[in-house]
Image (cartoon, rainbow, N blue to C red; front, side, top):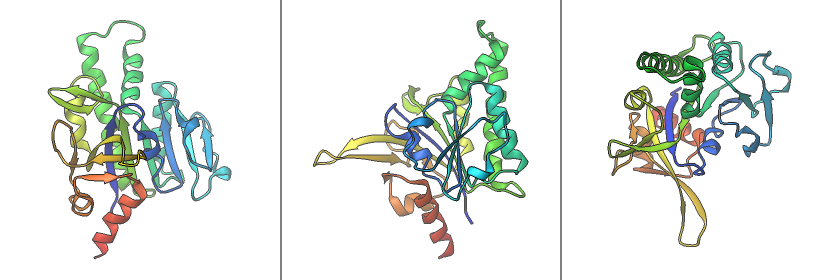
Length: 238
């Protein structure tokens, strides 16, 4: 079965968190933004990663929300995933923009960041992304999807994932898909979401699977992770 890793960026309010909760269940949302309370999933369980995973409360379509208030709690979440002793099929990090800030807080505290501190943050964050991406090939509990969300910011003439320093240059290379998500109105005034998955115009996007853009074209309307995985695996079966 083909899996998917994706970095999805966009402005505030475009529905990134909703998209991140559309993966196959049971799913884990690592919530550094504090928005898990508002996710529109009916079967929702909150979990403190300092404690055991509440397996007795998790069903096949449960969304488990791990609220991480500092970098240490994120590391605990990752350790559970790396152990393989969890039920999760998909994982979303919401968001890498906020997690990087918590990493900065961990490195510098309340003090001013020094030049060497930025190098430490870059190495730490890049290692995190690579380790999380490798969870899809975990020997006992591989993930079907890993989605990392980010705000969007203009950098070097393009809208890119909102992370600081050299991580902004490196992070797109770690993922199969980079999507730029927008909220739009159709001719009748109805809202719909659109995810650009090809590098068109001044927006960072890519599709290294090639299968998704072959099926959808340059944009995915109202994107859904489960549907995208189905497209990947239908084409693989064919």
